[in-house]
Length: 139
Image 1 (cartoon, rainbow, N blue to C red):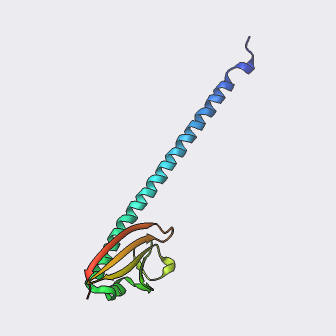
Image 2 (image 1 turned 60 degrees about the vertical axis):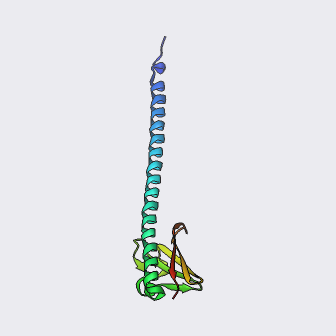
Image 3 (image 1 turned 90 degrees about the vertical axis):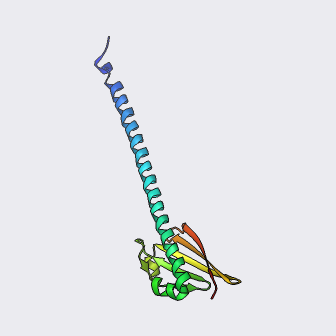
């Protein structure tokens, strides 16, 4: 004979707990996928902007040399390295505490050719977003 205690509610409760655990697992996987997609989107956006910024720096350096970079990008020099800073929205800034992105430029003279290496980095974690090598005839 069946008692009231064997009415099947315990089995139903176990099934409901399993279903809730399954939905929690699915929701956590979906959240992780969306976070990963957001990080990839951010990296792609930053890499695209970094390439445009590096190209701008290279073109101004080729046309106007270091004086043009000082006038347009608030260039600061630390030894052999030239540094340009942008904020998190890619606006040129001279304050290093507000820096979201940094370009480090080194220039090397090889005979009649000057070669500049421009590295654009994300300031918060030091991730290199873009590297560009530009050359021009030395003056």
